[in-house]
Image (tube, rainbow, N blue to C red):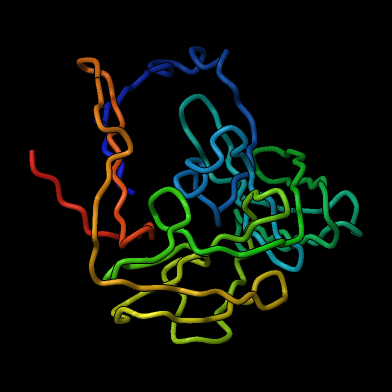
Length: 255
């Protein structure tokens, strides 16, 4: 699917002038995942997106930042620890990042400390229930178009929520990982059906990939779209080969 939407940039200046103008602005240490970004997850899980859970048997990398007014400053970490060492292990990987490896499902409270303060955060873990391949568009397609740069490997728990394991690897098949832990590089593979297996959470998961080189139709999500002047409106299209939804199509639009 391809979604079109006008882009509006809004700027809000809350911190011009001397420092006293920031007194009512939140100033705190925050923990962020470096392995999961909002665009990859928020379209599918818009209401629950936050710090994504880590797959049991896997690892996720986090960083700590200090948020003050409209500025974000990387923390220089001095220590990271799990309040209960039986639930997770934490390892400093740089001056401002650390790896979280859960040892049991559920929430593990961790504490990070550094030059700009400290904070405690509940990081969650769950077992992988199944693994899927999804397009950079929304949804799980039945095939990918030849020439598409990548498919996204999605680790999912029993409720369908996404998980992270930065140690994902390809253990069989003709494909390789792309530029991120969850990117499967499709490269110049010709049309056909392929099988592979990825290692995630400490075990192998089989996956099938179908690549196609033609389409039989493009269908709009809505036949008629009504918009309001100067308001963004989504206009969505789906590409098909017969009944099969195809991702990675090189879209072009003429107006």
